[in-house]
Image 1: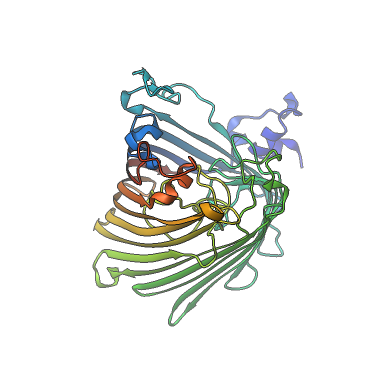
Image 2 (image 1 turned 120 degrees about the vertical axis):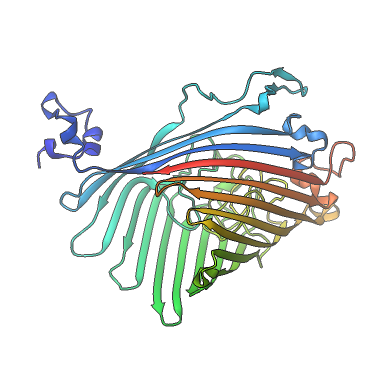
Length: 471
């Protein structure tokens, strides 16, 4: 094969070694390349009252909230298949600008230093740009198997699409109604900032999975079973899902279990990755979700209702890599807010530590949402979540146990302007109330509850407008 026939992505990779004789017209270079991706803009306005149980909003520098413009773009270039091999090259851009409602920056004395200053570069240039994917895809003729090698998004139920790893990911669907997955990554990272900044986790991650889907006379049945091993982090992680839907009814159950490595080098503060744990974590963790749905469109009524429940049977529910993953849920704030203490990741995400080996987390959360198609392309809905997170903290005489109760209401709307362009918005209200004995452990202040600087309630409202274009 001559280099002049290689794809654009391959030419880019070899550009440092190429000569003038390899130059070719742009039209010829990009012929047959498939391009897909997304452009997204978000405006998010957060408002707090007594953020993280700090009275007078001192925990947020007295600003009581912030407003952000956010921009994200993704583009994936896929070359034509040649001799069963193609190349993928994906770019992303992701940044935000905190406009601070025009209040400027706040110093350590809680004083505004410049009423015209926000954080982030806003309309200026910035460097939030990088390679999201760089892979070779091999598709042999003799089997329904795909091998992907290189840097790629980690697409598993314990990740989201922004988590990335470098390694190999293989899928096979030779057996009717079944798919099998195997993945191995020598380094990986989570979009929630784990371990921190531009670092990645330099510990191998392995996964195996089997997925099935059967259409029967009594409905469609689907199953998933994923197994994971992360060296020095988790000796075993398992995720299972069973779904059923028939006519207007649907049911789903999910269960995840993790056995963390409490003796590995990541538990000692001397390691370079001590921001992950730095203590012996709770080894056994689990989480289950149950959900049911009704879709009345069978009766020409454009209404859908879903209800669900989250719970755990072990002393902790730190079962996921990412803090969300593919667990069925509703609402927008309760699992991303430090005041509720809910963190299903086995890592410290957003300041929400998982329990230490002598501590406990017990979660009980109910959710429901209802959606109504006002028009064929315009939907309105509302989510409701109510839950309790029981925390047991401390040792000996200082051991305490208390509830963190919360509820969230989230009206939302979605307008599908075209197949590619979507407008959406929500306004979420989250109210959290904690027993005073656990507040010092949530805020990290230690000791007993301080009546002069702390409160046991937090109110968090968030308004968001999003415009998304897919191509």
